[in-house]
Image (cartoon, rainbow, N blue to C red; front, side, top):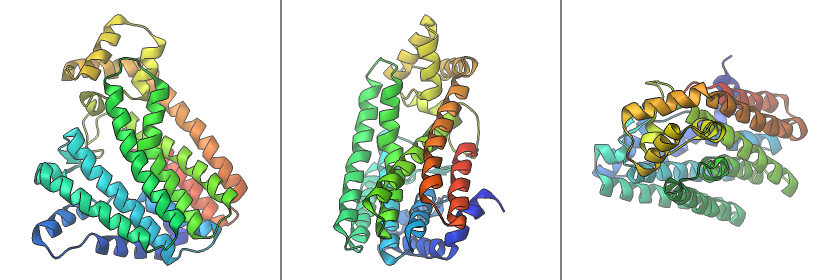
Length: 325
């Protein structure tokens, strides 16, 4: 059995129900809106975040309609944020498919993102749990704050690893944290269990983003972005930050500053990518992933008693650690 099948095994029925409910949420009778929502549904994905919410609910009890509506609200909020991010980043591709703003235009993309965000709020209101509503609302604030921090950091010519972690914690790990928290919350977990579930989600999310950033140092059509795409957008990620902070080559510092100023070209990006590889940046990033893996596994050791859920969450960590796209 492959890792994804192992992850889904304890919640196969519940996950199928989630997919049906989610697809129904992204439906509308208006022709243009319907077409744009279908465009978004086509890129699908593995739905790793709602899987985490469902598994966490199953760990502490059962998956209920509260769990499903919380998971739908979270995934819709995530989807809306991606639509808006593509506009902000002027991205033309998402998961190997043309982005919504590239297929239509920025005006349509922003409005569709707003529609999805409102649908997210509607579904989370169906939980009738003020804690869940508040958590999702705070998550929306955190995601936006992460984007703003990232934009601010582009103008900062320090090469701070700490700021990098702050950005990815807000932009990515916060989503995984909320999935784990709301899953546990929906199943009646104690305050301590909810807190520990959130810490698990945070560590998992940090692993996920570091792995995603490592992809940018290698060519892969499956990933849907070319090597050095983050640098082309003004972003310096963990492998190159490690290299820059451990070997002070003036020529590489100059190139890194060109990344931040948006004046770097493709050939120069290739030089900086190779510099990060040669100076051990990839190895360092993978070591940091292993650190977060150990932190996350402590939760499984202490708070997961059901064998199938232990197997699923361990497979989840292993999948994130080793995924190739």
